[in-house]
Length: 139
Image 1 (cartoon, rainbow, N blue to C red):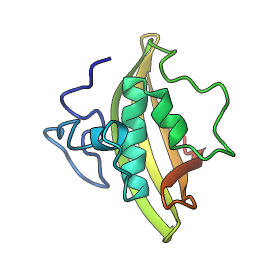
Image 2 (cartoon, rainbow, N blue to C red):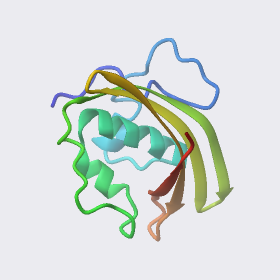
Image 3 (cartoon, rainbow, N blue to C red):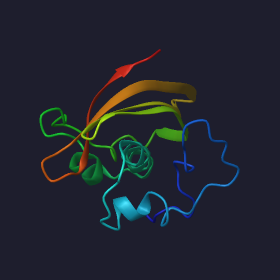
Image 4 (cartoon, rainbow, N blue to C red):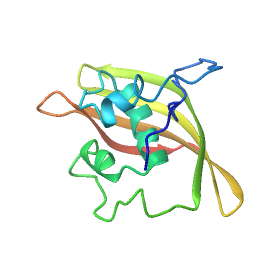
């Protein structure tokens, strides 16, 4: 798949209203394709949303904690899901190695609109890279 011109995450940040999405290359593309490491759990959350949108299973696996990553994860398998947008509700650093991000991701599948509202937990690994641990659904 060719990378998008505008970043699917829309440059989402807590309370922000984004009229024009930043470019993919300058936003999440630098993490997904450029090898740069997200500096915060919120940047990782945004880039993981974008990876779901573009179907990049390898990036999702690479940013998921080994202990909690599902073995059958395949973001490219469900072409019937259309991601519609991401809103970050809250980014809470807990300490230097732990953080939570509350978000709402909107998507459509089978002609029906859905919302995924979750509080996600993130942790820095021994190499200092943020990893997704798990999340609690909010709705």
